[in-house]
Length: 266
Image (spheres, rainbow, N blue to C red):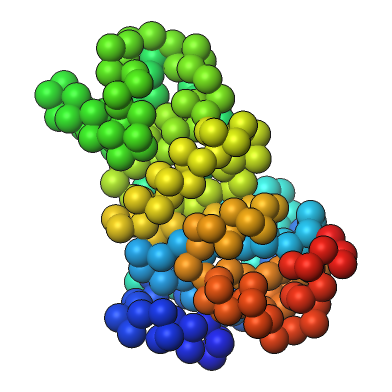
């Protein structure tokens, strides 16, 4: 068991429930051992940040949580990842349904070349919802959930690519929310955005955690300190330290963590 994570959870919130649990997780890209024996928990209705230098395994680990790495040739994974105590790597798991439960938002906004409405309705339609009134409800509630409705409600049929970068990223969040996920994975969602758009996304994440479990990869340590309940520090494919965010940033237990957050390397 990853004792530090559990202790941090108990200090922050006795009721913190484990939503995703990785145990002895290893990932190989051919001969490259990219993730090394990772064990940590993500807690329900909490934001967990993954920090560390470029190429340390943060995004690779994030993508193991909804099996996005299945799409990469030559990948080998062993260990377990449990979602609500069920192994997501069980051969019987339907990855389409898994990715409905565990949505993902990428570094670069990637709206589809279609209308704002159709971007959000795309997922529900794929999962069999055809009723227009129901789709209208989903589109509005998802855009409201992504703090975008007030800005686009009068132009839902206009091309999504006409939105600003920050609006496009919130549209991608709305698109993820439209299929009613339980977990939201975010891979550096603000790295391509200006400071005002970044602040809007951070405020949005703080709101989203009341309904979802959120995991975010960020290069911005100040961002992790502002928004995350828990933070994991990755280095060369390993988790060096995982704790409540305020604990990790103020009293790190590993000198490598201290060196990274104080800017001595990375």
